[in-house]
Length: 122
Length: 107
View (cartoon, rainbow over the protein chains, first blue to last red):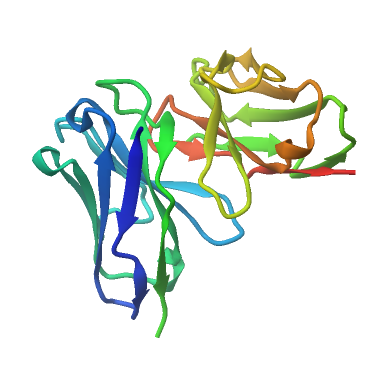
């Protein structure tokens, strides 16, 4: 059974940093691209960042480029998001997401984590 | 960026009704169009990918069609468990983008 478990969310002051983690199990992690998608409570979905299986392809939404860094550790079956210079508008649920097709990078998600809430406020 | 325009933003229908949601892309997305269902407090769930392919395990009352820039999502017979918000999403070009969502309610 595929499981994606996010952690690391919480309340943080504007300008500070946070690191999200996603622990993956139930599939061959290093065969699949992974993404972070966020959702402001009560609002729509927004793609944040994605990384290919071998970390060769990485992309960011303009809203986080230069502030967020995605990475993965295939030996630990884990995905990460380092979030720096956080802003109130970064407040959202952050979902870890697995790409459906092995070897692909584009955002077609067949499994999602349960989400972790990041709140940026003073 | 490719803009995804979804309509309507909400709808109310009776159990057994046919429900249709449309999604228009601002440019040709080569049928790389996906539909997700999100129930309150839950993560999204993939229903349709590549415009018309039904994800494994998804009931056949859900379907998708369309090509190029214009796409349609249909529930042939609305069930109480289908109450959710539905999102289209293009996977053709970075940055990957979603429609604004359609909230489906029971009349």
